[in-house]
Length: 213
Image (cartoon, rainbow, N blue to C red; front, side):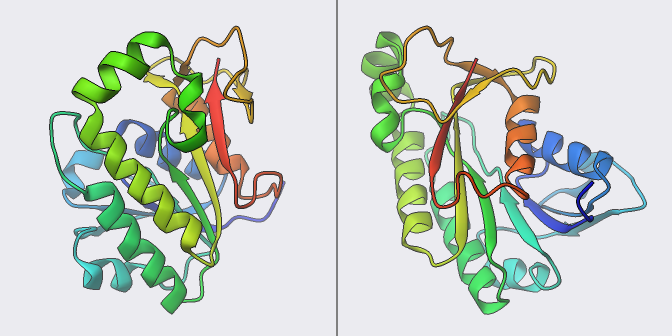
């Protein structure tokens, strides 16, 4: 087993973020959960530290950053909420990482961003994204641009539609946007498993990786 790492998780109270925290702790890592409302996390563990802060406040992010080996980001907002939390928060995270000389960054976005757009089903591509998810996708596009411009060692996870299914470990990753037979769905637990696995694998260094069953 690889040695335990000190991990900083943003978006820890979200669906995928919570799995990142619980799975990382189960793997023996030391986890700092950066949250706006600590009571929403509802977890206690000897190797868990909860830091209250706002990712939109750079000073909060910078204060939490020192002493970590890697940063995992699962920021998100409801589709009806038209804001720039993902991109603005990620900008602060990347800036603080550079100040603190932390290199490894693994970030959650979504399938359909950039060159993965062709993988989306007709309904998502021509109705849901342009009519319902337009603002969220635009913010994720900006988020990915910021990551690609950063000198950190990044990996972007682009899952299909997220579900609350069990962790299976049986999913596809790194497939072409033109791949056939995909369900364009994946459990948050499996996305978290993939993101944590990247801490020790260089395969997808500085790449955006599509995930689906």
